Amino acid sequence: MPSLLDRLPPVRTYREIRRDFDRLVLVLAAGDLVASFGFALVFPFLTIYLVENLGATAAQAGLVLAAYSVCSIVSGAAGGWLADRVGRRRVMIVSVGLTAIVIALMGQAGDLASITVLTIVLGIVDPAFIPAARAAIADVVPEDRRPRAYSLLSVANAVGWIAGPAIGAGLATLGYDVLFVISGLIIGCYSIIAFVWLPETLGRRAGTSMSADPEADEAPVVVGATPAAAGELTHDRLGAADRALTATDEERRLDRARVRAFAVFLPIAAVVHATIFLWVTVLPIHASQDLGIATNAWGLLFSLNGLLIVVFQLRVTSLVEGRPKAFVMAAAMIGYAAGMGVIALLSGPAWAMPGIALAIVLITIGEVLLFPQEPSFTSDLSPADRRGRYQGIFLGATGVGTALGPPVGGYLLDAAPGPTLWILASGTFLAASAALALLGRATRSLPPVDGA
Image (spheres, rainbow, N blue to C red):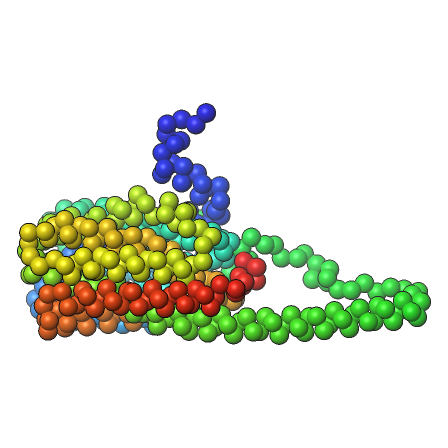
């Protein structure tokens, strides 16, 4: 009879993961937890460091972060390409190792020019590991279980971001040079984890095994067969050749359909992520200036997102497992649209705190549904030998969105203070929901690539 501890959802979920997934998924989750904690020590305070310690203006600090986003677009695509060429493991080890070194050096930068150069280098080396990690999961996890595997990475990342800022605030009192070095050392542990425990997955097929005898499927040669039998055998071989040709034509048609679906998915994802990023970058300004929410109160509200992800991410993903991914993403857009709609209704400080809290709950529902499905849907559309490249291209598309969203949103907030931006954002999510539903109808009949 299971104990009370065994009945707890986190324990039950962990045992399901141990039962259902390759060890690689747990290794990547452990690495993500360590790395996200290291990043969370410094990144919430990076703009403060730029302004207070290096004399940057707010605009200059924004440009430094924008340089990182622009470089990450190229880095993500290059990392995916390299993951398909030299292997997932190698790309992850090198990318995370160089990231740790660059972040440790950022604390030693004595002027704005130096840290700008280091931030650009960080944007070149850091995002490369993401498509490699996503491709590695697609290599070993069957198609129907991939959303849950990606959910585990989201939970690990959320745990790191819950704990990191509070501890980073305390370490910052020792000096930013110490804080950045500690962050770099912690992130470097991910590289060690990958080096020791992470296997190479390039070339593996999820849930299948390669035939030990490449000639096993060839037609047998019949010695001493009668002419009639020989004629029948020849006819059978010709029929098999015709069927193989027809199968090849059908596979080419399916490949073209997958490419078209991916080409449609990319701009939708770019627009969605541009709009999603508004609540992280522009909403704090609106909350402070227009709704009167203090900075420390906003920090508590922001942490609500991470807590909800940790509690609900895996269970929600399990509930929608097996459902068409594009339709799940379409449903996620409804959550985002509702959250932005709530923000649009707030006009002053009276209901600001509960209103923003409700908006964050709705936005988090959208995030919990959306984020595991995106890399999984990308994997479903990508050929097995180009999974890294497809993940890198997808990462580049979302990078374009996150680079453009904040400045456009900030301009709109300045030009039309109040609900205008949030009404537009809600409408954008509703349009994206309709587009994803149509994409789901178009891709519903597409079989998984290589039976994965």
